Image 1 (cartoon, rainbow, N blue to C red):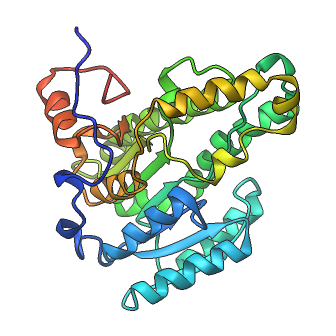
Image 2 (spheres, rainbow, N blue to C red; image 1 turned 135 degrees about the vertical axis):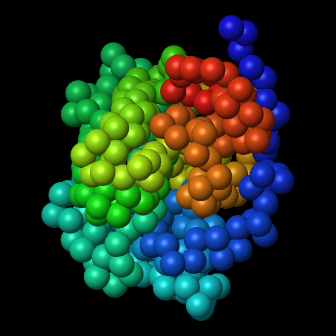
Length: 306
């Protein structure tokens, strides 16, 4: 099978035009991890603009407070709360889910966005630092999902989105821990979707599974994460890494941070049912991707854009 080609999108386009989603998420409760800044903050904004009650969370109190205040001011008719916590600490995310549930209601939309990355050759990477990327990018979102999922299963309703990366399907040098983590979380999303498709009918007795799971590649967007991705060890012992990645970033267009934000709304609003369980590339036209997936019988791929 030849590799499909889809229109490259770098900013808002018809399929994710915000106006069509006005009040589409009214009555829904959304939790977005890592939403004090960057991509997570914009996802939280898009969800609130679409009518969802939103829980902003992150480790930095000042960022969580600022984002919560901004959203509350921008959308006075929407409930917004801020909860400070570390998604790597089980006690923190248990408290997080309790706070969201008690103040907003059961979680309908879970965006596992918090993550980390370090560009460094594997042979000079400390073992603890390497495994920490797996902790933050894999263990944290899976364990948070473990806590949120039972309520969704009882209601047979919910959307779970993992912020992944195109690195899940590519051999990106200098980021072995990150790439392995994104591959793992993407595969987890696909497996979880398959399990739910069976369990919701066979065990819970529903006619169809009403829970959707997606992973997204947000696009090569410059955020605060990029500023901290080059530790001093890389700068001193492997400056070639910085030079190579700088050339790579220059080859990419300037992707709008609105792409992942409104793609998440598109998926949470139920428009991406054909893409459930897959890695969705936010930089590719969703209508074209959906048409390709639905027209390909028994397409056994995780990446919707493969």
